[in-house]
Length: 473
Image 1 (cartoon, rainbow, N blue to C red):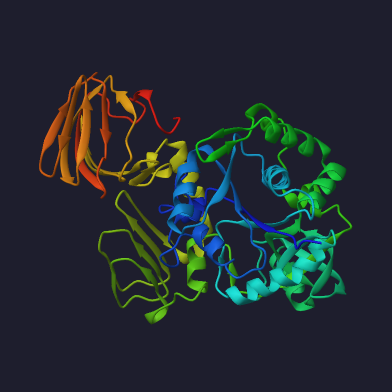
Image 2 (image 1 turned 90 degrees about the vertical axis):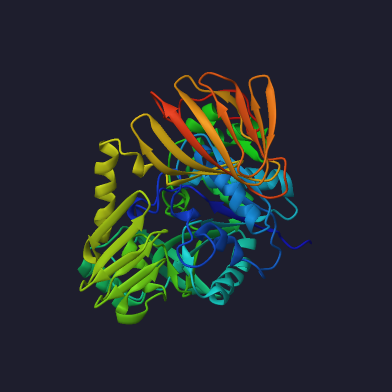
């Protein structure tokens, strides 16, 4: 009998609002480089290197993040199947879609194992994590539904817990899940040694998960099966059928399956796990420096203690403060007491209620062709820095309310403006009148960088009429 393939299933949704202003709706925390030079998503895949039988990863994400997901996989040289959810339906339907796709691609002899991983966690001890996965493999092969329980080191009230049952080889039978406790209950759980934090990570056979779903949540199975059967390919993405997928009940794996199955197994995980749920969590994953400060970026501090200090680009300087969170980005600055880190979500909710764009996008906005960055803006004008990757091109488009001036700073630009095509090099410029069809391309082998000056009565991103687009937007 052939050895099973392990298909990593990376769940790429989530908003990470407690990590605002770095994390935004269209660029949430899983795509950020918070710990090192790789994003949390990229490290989720990188820590699997060396596990036996690894197959092609399956990423499950949404429409808004699809090009970010593809780009981040490309950056680390790992291909992936990318499934696009047309609606947020929680983890049980997402993993069902991955299971159906894996069985379609890998067959059933033997059925593939799915290693389900959130994309926004930090695990500092990779070897210990891989040991836990290896311990889980025999149980998953035998048809068990395995979850990984984090060994607690404090009476945490922000996590759900898992109570262990009878001992098994490398782990325990799963007795039950329990909700987030109050402080006294959390301390009792810690003292008993019988409880783990619920990590949200799983290992099981694709067919075993679908069988359990069919038993306990058949509506999810039926709807998602239709959504996968009617899915369509779009570039590098598989778009699940929107009507069928939206009809699925929205439930987590825990609620739909794990809390009901008698075949649950929990494997202890003691590997420096952290879900980076808020800014103060960064101080607990080994980045604490002088005077208890956690710093990243251009930060200088004097007489500053026990602070979390992050800067994107600009100089951040502090004097005579302690126990603060200070996060500086080009378009927003957050200052908060560390004990109030969880309340950042309330702040973001208020900002969203006020329709502030700073909750939605970052100052650098990624597109399939490259990125753009706001430099300056005012009444009737806006300045952007645009970067176009080699061989890429923007859509053929026009605007009803603005004209544009393009200055080439680096590389070579091919510009379509009405019936005219121009080839411009560094320090040359072009003018795009209001209402004229135009397109920007990079025919060269290095990044094209231009400065765009927009002028007009309305400068919103929705003032784009696309007539042709390589990326199906």
